Image (cartoon, rainbow over all chains, first blue to last red; front, side):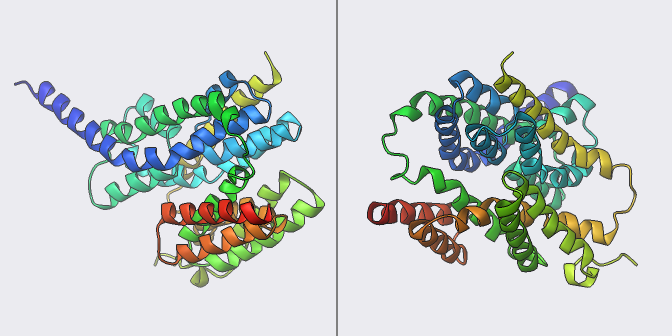
Length: 242
Length: 98
């Protein structure tokens, strides 16, 4: 067997190893993909547009925010800016994962950054921390199923969402704040978590009441981040390196 | 092309910019200032909080009950358990208080 064939087999098993790890994410994101499709059509998107948004943006929270503002007839550039603001957290992931995948060919890196979601980042970082190489085949195995199911389920939600009789009674309109609260609480072990949450909550509420949506997201986020920057580093758990 | 399609394309480009931007910026520096790092660490909690707080403030008793249960379950359970518990309480409470 040639060396090339051996490495090809290795890549295949790496890919399927990634696929196995992707399954919990596929299951957990399914309700949100269906929900996105349903809400998108409800707010005036066509089925094709809902499908395209999931295929091109591939970011659940930002898609929900975008569709919500679209339904409120907010100016298009504000919708795009809001999508950018909600997705701004990916800058952090991007900065972190760069070290792990710098050895890939440029085209593979371009794909890698496209499918960089919250779980993708978390699972890949864990692999890297364990001292293992983050290979492209493994990374693609982890991300591709999530992407494919996300897009298909969005379209299904768009087609069949109209069949859901009473979305208010089913609580669909408030499921996301619940999910986001869960995510916020998931970061509670981080230094400065409580001050940051309090600052962001207060600033976003004030901005929501005065400046209005969608600025409250950016203004609230900036308030929390600035607080972490301003407080002395020994509070934030980030020590200056000797 | 429709306005909707433009929004989708621009939104996709903006999103890709965030996914590649952090790497492009950070790869130009050898060291990250501790304060910048502290700010970056605060990003997830800061952004996600803004998606909850105003919604919670303008909601009613059913939603508040759901958020409280979500917070309580978070002390022990994982993200999925939290979400399912909060959603269950919301659906149940809305049957009574609308």
